[in-house]
Image (cartoon, rainbow, N blue to C red; front, side, top):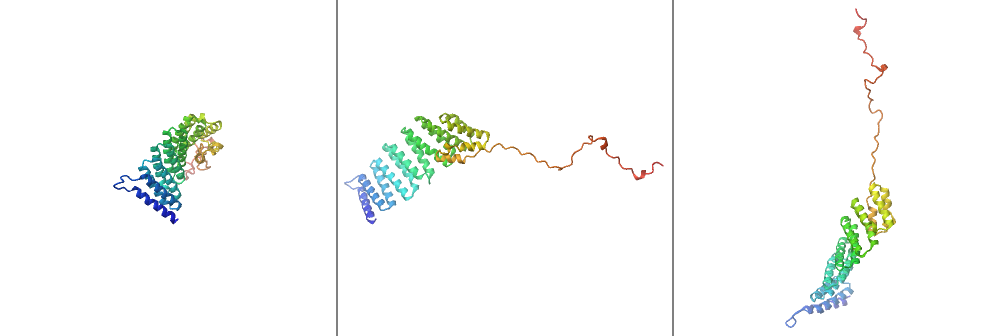
Length: 317
């Protein structure tokens, strides 16, 4: 290990020597300096000194950039991403991926730039989904500029699924519609049918039944028979406030076997509450005396005359 460290330090001294200028050397030798820094990075990696390895890769990238070797500069940053992953230093990965992608684009290799963004997003997806989301969105923009529609649809799918995972249903609906548009360009009706189901689920999660029904009417012609039957039952259940029918529709096999994010969304979707029926009023017997009209009594029920006064006893004098 110590020999590798010493070897790396020697390469760094040589790189610094290449960068120095003098009266007879007006311009730094960026090409050889980049190579020396890259060799130092390899030695540091073999010695498990990952911090110094990453720093040397960054310096090598900067030298390549100064020398207008943009592809090699981007490649060094690409390698630095993997070193950060080994170090479990995920906070710097998004920034490195964006810089690498920018250099690849300047060189004229946008596909390589999108690949870097995709690789970095996969690393961040579980622990930093917000950063992964931004990287996938940039990847969509990069490949669609180059008319790589199929690749753009793949990245757009990842954008929509992360949004669903994060509960960003409004943005997820827009992302799914964009993904549908990309599949329309290549005529992939089967994918559009599956996305129609996903869009209906997202609209129901938003609590917008009208938008869910509109999505089905717009894209339902791309669904197969089983999907159409399930969506019709699902929308009818929400229209009729029938939770049992909705549960049966959401438990259909093809919904359970959708992408994990959509299957979980269907599992956790709030069911309609059903139509509530007002309970009958309870009658309490003998709670109050019955009312009797004075005009409704029979002759035998007439009130008795008042008792005679004691002063009237014996009659008239």
